[in-house]
Amino acid sequence: MRNFDTTLYFITDSTGFSEEEFLRRTEEALKGGVSLLQLREKDKTTREYISLAKKVHKLTKKYNVPLIIDDRIDVALAMGAEGVHLGQSDMPIDIARRILGDDFIIGATTKTVSQALEAYKQGADYLGVGAIYPTTTKVKTVLTSTETLDAICKAVPIPVNAIGGLNKSNINVLEKIPIAGICVVSAIMKADNVKAETETLLTLTKELRK
Image (cartoon, rainbow, N blue to C red; front, side, top):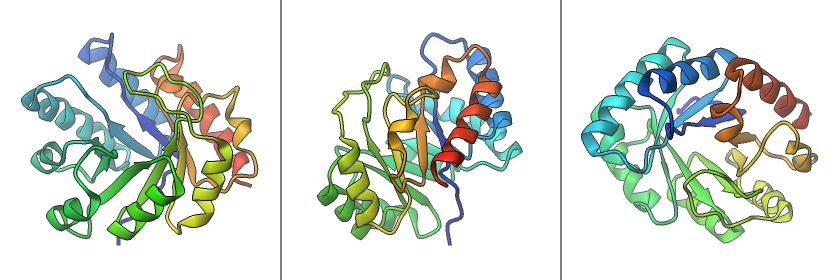
């Protein structure tokens, strides 16, 4: 059985940081209480991605947090990550599950109830749903309404996380929606005090779920 907690799901963005500073910020986020960490690198070569993933994995293992690799099943297998996150244009989840086996965490990005149900049936362990707000990351942003998020949460029995431009000043829009947690990038990655911001977001997310 795959054991993980999506309460505060941190997605990294190394853009504009030296590797040393990137790893420092990543560790500060882990100290602050992120429960799941996804390494997302769109522009690195396979070798560069594997090299960085190994360094990040040392940190996540230190804090007992599963490491999820974005998109790249080959990278996840090569460096021994705990999971992979797949978008709508990536490898189908059922094929990934056959390759990776039952103990591997597989997450999926969905934007509609039908996509969510399909991902669940194919073997996804959790869903990231959004974007709730426009984002500043280098990802195509298609907004998802909170009504759709609510409907997805109620349609599938696996954890559903809201994603997209979320921070401490706007996550109250998720009140009364039965999310498992939130996914954040910039709110943590670009914070002046990464550990303190992470702690605040964790507290607010737990309050939301009460």
